[in-house]
Length: 113
Length: 112
Image 1 (tube, one colour):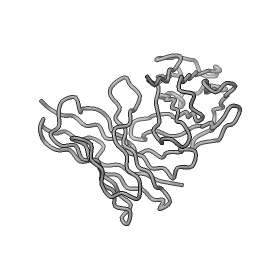
Image 2 (cartoon, one colour):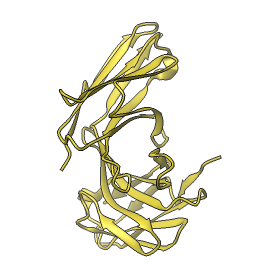
Image 3 (cartoon, rainbow over the protein chains, first blue to last red):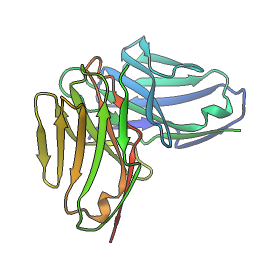
Image 4 (cartoon, rainbow over the protein chains, first blue to last red):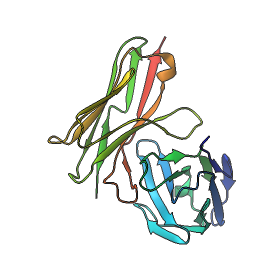
């Protein structure tokens, strides 16, 4: 069974803290994605990675960075958390070529106070 | 870049009725259009998709139609059931590293 897991379901951090969100997939997928989900805005792409150590900016990369040291793990880093980064963060993965289906994790609800 | 608009933002129907959600896209290079369902507390899950060389696709009570000329596509759910209650997202992609542009979502409420 396909599985994408995210390290935390809920997270509360203070303004200025460095925050790490972890995502792991067990499907040997090449491509991994980080989205944020806000009411009325849908899912917006922050960063994606199509291979180990490779990354590409999405539509809203400002204030975020990513790391992909191993194929199965994709980390989202908030260098200095701000209140406008309070959101739901979703990780997804796909395999190149066979199918376009994105497999999503359950999400991490991050609150920055 | 691509812009996907989705309507309505909320939709309430009686059990057994049909529901229709509509999306428009701006980039004529987009060639793949999936629909995702997100239940409470879960990540989105693919329910149906359509490619640009097809005008309609059906899977049991769910169907998707695509009008490439007008750049719009729609999700149709017939004989709605309470378990269809969820948030639905449309998306568009031109298949480059599977990059997707999502609509803003439709919250469907099916009243028993």
